[in-house]
Structures are given as structure tokens and as C-alpha cells.
Length: 269
Image 1 (cartoon, rainbow, N blue to C red):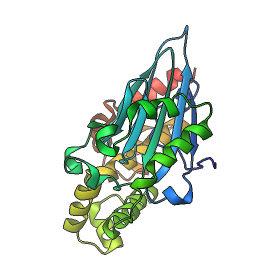
Image 2: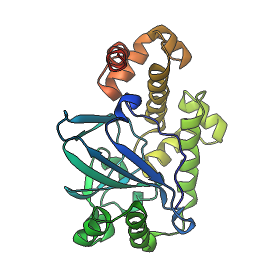
Image 3: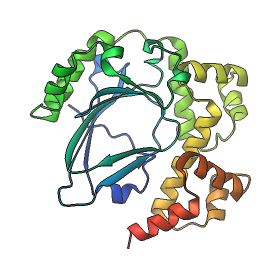
């Protein structure tokens, strides 16, 4: 079982957060590669300590999330996601490739944004067995092996449109020069209208929303690793002005850049 070496992004205050839990990520085997991007496992032991509020600005991928509260399928997350860790606990998750669950949902995926579903309704799992063989597994290997076996029947040929959207989303994520939908349309040779339709159908979020979200991933990384002014941050990310950057921070994270930088400074002292 190979560890995933994909870069973790979109975590608020990642250096501080990493002190509160242990994260392991694993690649799927080749038979599941079209369905699953990675398996992830988190556990923590905070007895005698203050609860930790984990805050992420996650990718738009859907996840299977297994905890003591049950097994849920999480729809695309549009803004900041917050989870409180306290005492001792564990979460086991599956991050699915973008768009592959869109047609399995009981509603269009754009209606599933910031929504969760019972895993048994989406996959038909036996929840008791699922919890026993994942949360109760003696090792990461055993938990991932069980999930891999249970998901085998859900592997299907991925439609070309889904593969196209996956490629486009990767371009948005990894090419910081793509700051407008019109530029993505030019590079991909799709019309803006066609891009909007594909993203609505398979991602649930518009390409414009995703561009703004991934620019904030870059902003969080810059604020974490170097001292930059708000003006420099806006210029580095090609915002028209500081007010647009502040607006995006407020929309997605519920902080201004100044508030986030101030909190970051306190954590590093």
C-alpha cells in the first residue's frame, strides 16, 4: 500500500493544525484508480487538552467519511469546512475522483453542495459491518483493504465528459495564471457556456467559483510561509485590487486577510 504524495492544500494554519492530529493518505490500487483519488485516515488524542477546530477550504471532490457518528457521503464543499476534534477519535475517509459520483446522487450534484447523505443510501453498505471493519480495524492496511473490496462493484467506465472536467479542474488548481473563465475557455477550446454546463453537471460548482477558491489556496500558502502585505498578496494573485481579495476571503473563509494573518502570527509565537 503506497502513501499518497499529493500536496495537501486548503488547510487553514496547517503548521499549527498538524500538531493536533495524525494524517495518513494512501493511493488506491490500479483497479480503483478511476474511482478513488486517495484514502485518508486521521486520528487524535486530545485528552486533557482544549478541543481543536480543524478548518479547511477543501477541493470540490466528494468524500465518504466514516466516524463514530456513522458513515456519510459529503457533497462538494463550497466554502470553509470546520470540524471539532476533542478527546480521542478517528475518522476514515475516501476522496473520490472529481465528478464520478455525480450520477449516483438522488439529486443533481449542484443541489448537493454543502450537503451530506447517508452512505448506505449511496452505496448500499451494511453500516454496522462498515464501521466494524474500518474504525475497528487493527491497521490502516486492513481498513483500506476492506474499503477497497467494498468499492470494487462501483468501478465503472468513466464518461469522457467527466474526464474532461477532471482535466479542466486540475488546470485551474495547478495553473495560477488561469484567473478568468474566459481564459480557461480559450486554453481548453470550450465555450464559456459549455464550461459552465459541464461544471454544473459534474462538479456542482461553477468554474468561476473554483478559480476563486483555488486562488485562496495560494493565498493561504503565501500567508503561512512568508510575510507578505495584503497589497503584495493581491498583486501576486493578480487581483484587480485589495478589495476583491478581501471580499473573497470573507466569502470563502469568513475572515479578512488581515484577520487571518494576525491569527497566524499569534500561533507562531
